[in-house]
Image 1 (cartoon, rainbow, N blue to C red):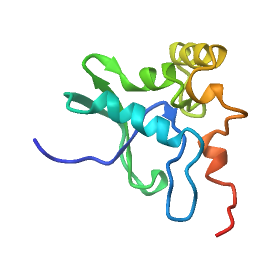
Image 2 (cartoon, rainbow, N blue to C red):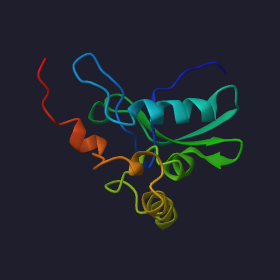
Image 3 (spheres, helix red, strand yellow):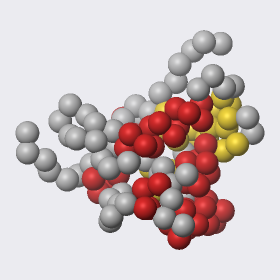
Length: 126
C-alpha cells in the first residue's frame, strides 16, 4: 500500500556501514550491496516478528522473503552476516553460517571478523 516500515532483518546481524561517528566495519559495504542486489526491483514479502520499540531503536524485527527466498538465509550463505545467536536457535540457519565459515565466503574470508554487536561497542578516536 506504499507505506514504509523501519525494520531489522530477523535472525541475522550484518557488518556496520559507516556512520557519522564511526568508520564502516570491514565487509559493511559488502553486506549492504549483497542485500541491495537481492531486493532491487523485486517483490518483497515482509512479516513483522517483533514490534518496534525503544529497546530496538524503533525498528521492528522482520522476516523478509524475496521471490520465495528467505533473506536471512541468503545473507548467511553469502557470508554477509552473522547468525544473531542471542535471538535465533534455528539449526538450519546455523548450518548455513557454518558452511560459509568453512568455505571462507564473504566476511569469513577476512582476518578475524568482528561481530557487529562487539564492533558497535568499540571506541574510536574522532
